[in-house]
Length: 218
Image 1 (cartoon, one colour):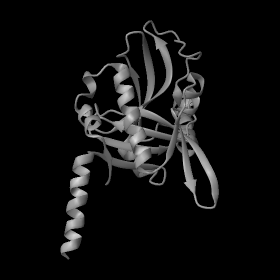
Image 2 (tube, helix red, strand yellow):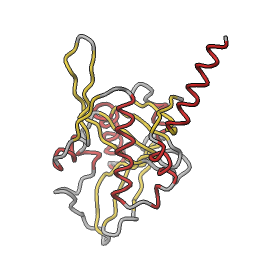
Image 3 (cartoon, one colour):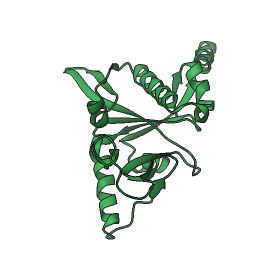
């Protein structure tokens, strides 16, 4: 498993993730996502427009590819969970009031399954300290929309790595979601999903130092 070193304080905050305020959680996931991109030497530019954030994500990633002019993709940072015993990501389908009627969020009751077209999803799972890099806008997003449509029309069951759930923890709304088993997703789409271990930067440097020391002793 490939390791991604992150700042010690960010790694330590993952241990207390559920005690953080909502905005603090988002900022932590965002910082870790940016560290992941920086580890791969990708240049990043933050997207500040709320309208663009909703559809394009949080960050423009500038990738240098030999013989190709600077290529730009967009990345969105998401927080994953592990409440069901596996690494998961809840993808919003639609929103409802506590009374069960449609709830309008940012101009629509449709969730980000339909509205987010980011090239890349960077999913941080605080409990297991995992990071999943997912190529989103393409096969996986289309597969999920198609699978849910066939399920809703009672034509075909959902794939084994997807379950339908209703999230009720929000005080103001309920959210219908597709709960994705990220471990199975990585198995289903090995070319589109990559799993990483998040480690403290000092631990990473110590292991790297020990590795080079072993090489010198050979």
